[in-house]
Length: 607
Image (cartoon, rainbow, N blue to C red):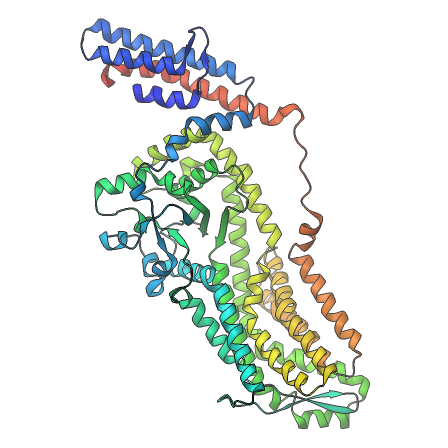
């Protein structure tokens, strides 16, 4: 009974109890005195007195809450709850505030993430800290290899880009210095321009930078001397074999969240079905009113697709470097065009040939896999918003039924009621996630740029050779092609495919979606490559690149950042929010009133 009144004090703060003239502190002191006196007397009179006193105090407090609901604003209510329940999120055992590093987390290709079984050895992989960089919130039912790929990408993509760029610059620097490289140059290529033939050098110097990039993605965290991000992973930071240490760690889980700079949600559709995932989200939401910039939502399929796109474009670039000088850009084909096709027909002919090669030789078969992913990803986004909009704590799953009571008590302490927390998730968190998804588009542009990275190194070697030969017109054209292929064409094609997958298009046909994806990729890349033909004036090259750049900017939410979010109209005099607050607090007052009689009947047994 005394514990119930302590919980009530945290809810009611220091309000004056109407009719009784007692503050909540005096209420608790009165109960403490009654509880102490009950140890010296076991008479029925004392038990009845205690039962009646508890019921009277609870009824008076319920009346006070009901009256208080008419004047308290939502902001004031959140501040009151935060002040009253702050102790629930304190670090009670500083020596148990521990974190591991990304180096240990990803060692042996993420072996720690494959299962939730912990031991004393896994606890030793963490160390005491004062601040945690990232709190990893995830469901153990999610495949560990998916989480490993996502964390490798998040931890190492910046390092991998720097390492690949450094290797590329070193190679070009050695070549300029006259140092021979053991990488053979592929046969020269020829592009028709009017009545002349222009020569290009296509080589495979992009292979070492791409190879280094992949190595850095997988093993970048192992490089000595680099700063390490500290992470919270439950099986490493909470002892799994010592029952006492395990309970202490679980009880201060809120303290782990309070000491974390970011909450990283490794999201899969099963995430919002787990009770402890909701607990972590609730605690972090309670600590930080404004979650923008503090929560990093990582859909786990996106890093996987990014690395698959990188591997695909690497193989495609290697195939083009070997086959293009022997076919469409060969010397015999260039001379055949000059002899058999008029100057005005060069560009249409090249466009048709390049698009056909891209469609049948490059994108037709991968188009089926790309379309499948597009449907998976867009369905996941819909599932995420549906889960947030219909979020209910009682529908969440957990292994131990006792955990449900623990989480419910904490949520009631932090937010006043489970209903209030559910409302915050359905409204505040859902709006935040919806805005983030809208700002970055169906897939972040940076991920698509990384997926097309081989195009950068492939085109860069051609541009450097043209600059060394002082062929500046071709240098400008090649540079524009490099920018368009690396930054615009694949980004636009993937965006179009993802947006089509978000509609009913292609759902009833096995071939419509993949064929459209392959056609869009082929047309955009063919449009860019024909600008290498010097028959076209240079301003057309600039116009095509600028048009693709603007289209990419629009598709990936650039206009939102330029215009800014339109402010939502606020309710007049707090009518809407205030009404919601009144009804929530009034409902709590009714619950307390009902609990009063039950607690009165059970108080004798409790004492």
